[in-house]
Length: 217
Image 1 (cartoon, rainbow, N blue to C red):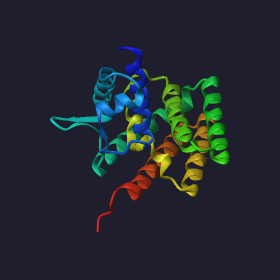
Image 2: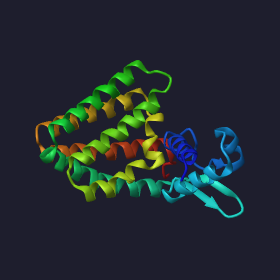
Image 3: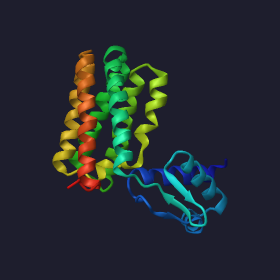
Image 4: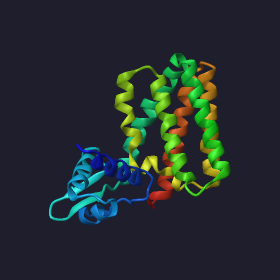
């Protein structure tokens, strides 16, 4: 696959994951070709890759659309993440390297500074840094199988873009939870790391439900 297709793929993926392209948005090949200054072939290849990852749905005779998520989809993914990432956090407390711990602390520092300064794209930056934070914990678990299974779940578009919808209190709470988690990992407290990660993800899910889905009567 050529370089233009890679660039279109990365840009579209970022826009989907950060919410710039909303669920259900129609991805028209001709329009995207003009927007990115490429032929239709790189666009088609990029859409095919995104379709393979579940970020785009291709409907016969209608075209490509940003995949939509319902409450059941989100509940399933968050339940699996809560189980797997809490286990990863416990392993990280026992296996992390000094360099990996320093990386977690650095990401916490960067996210807090980003939230304080609030430049025009600070929510995009927070979403990417949050993704990096969770991947660093997965890496620190020193379990390649766990990493491979779980890392894909962290890329769900509705989940990775959640920072775009948090209010100020929710943002601060999420960053504080990151600090608590790093503290448990630094102290090699596997039980605390497991509990904090599970609570963090389940709290994120409850916020998502209140923001995106109707509550039952």
